[in-house]
Image (cartoon, rainbow, N blue to C red; front, side, top):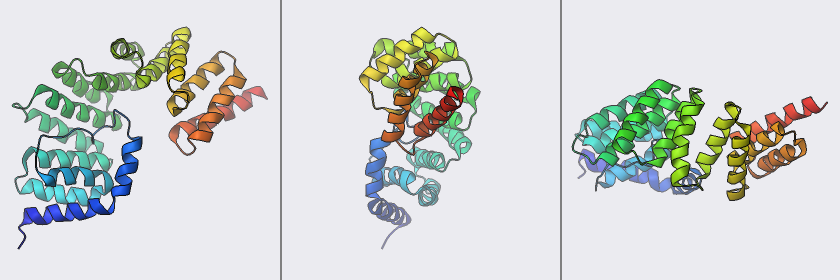
Length: 268
């Protein structure tokens, strides 16, 4: 005879088994700064691992199970799964406040783990377009883990989203100094340099990223923009056409299509 905890575990287990192919696909395309999903609370409980997977594949079912588990005394693991599930559902403010509350309750946890939860709160606030709150959470995370380049990239994205481009560049400089081949940092810094009209520096970063990853969508998009600014219209066109061919249907490909349309208007 099942108790409630066993029943929740079985429900989650069954749902996860049915969706394993989707899990595999998500694993291929998730970026390094993917927000709520990658961080884990230390737990040997199979319910937690299944709940976190289900939060990515069937968040509606995951939320019901996670809230029930939380009410049963599931502790930090259950609360983390609830927050991650709200993130997957697109309820970013709800997720952010829960991540922040959880981080505040983790006084005995290792600092890197608390930093990771605060970083998740920052990502959720960023997705909610609450840039000041995102910056505050990410800055608090960096106080605990000052050498974490993932959090530095996240905070740079927040700063750029708030149009604080030079401050974003400062964070990205730290990332590139530690890892000169970090493509995300190079592309983001190229974009930030472009917005402050430091075009030669932007071009340098975009070219470095292109040498490292000539087929990455964000690389091709930014590289094409800088080619256009240099009046290399044919080069820009080829970069954007390549992006659309390789990554049709992605946000980057849609942006490339809009840029192509604007390019054609200007040519005429």
